[in-house]
Image 1 (cartoon, rainbow, N blue to C red):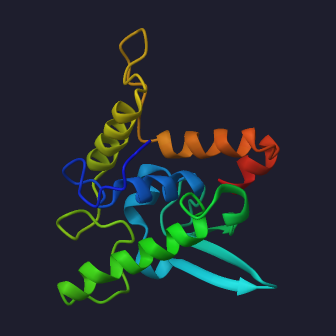
Image 2 (image 1 turned 90 degrees about the vertical axis):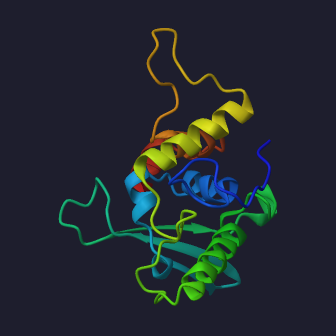
Length: 178
C-alpha cells in the first residue's frame, strides 16, 4: 500500500503523489492530461443525491481540435470507501491545490490541479518518475524481461482501465470514457 505522503516522490512530480496518482487512475489520465489539468477544470456537482465529479481536460490525444474533453464519474464511496472514492479524493485535491495558489498569490484559474513542489505544473519526467517510485514501493517490476520499461506514463491509464474491467464495465464503455 502507498502511504499518504504529502511530499514529492520525484523532482517535477506531484505533491501528495498517492492521492494524485489515484485520481489519475480513476480518470484514466495520460501524463500530458495529468500535467495540464487545472483547478477550475475540476467540478463537483450534486444531482439526485449523487455527487458527480467532472474533469475538463484541456489537452487530450482524443481531442485534436483542442476543445477540451470532459470525463465524469459518480461517487463510489459505498463501493470502494472514501479513501479510494473519486469524489472525496478530487474534492481534497482541489482544496489542496488552492493552498499553494493562494500562498504565491496566483489566480486560481490556470493553476495546476496537481502542483509540483515548485508550485508549477508537473513535468512529464517527474510524473513518470513518480509512477515508477509508486511501482517500486508496491513491488512491481520496473522493467520487462527484454529490458524495456514496464512502468511508463500510461500507467495511470492502464491501471484505471484494468480496475474498471475487473469491476465488470464493458471494454467498449471503458474505451469511450477515455
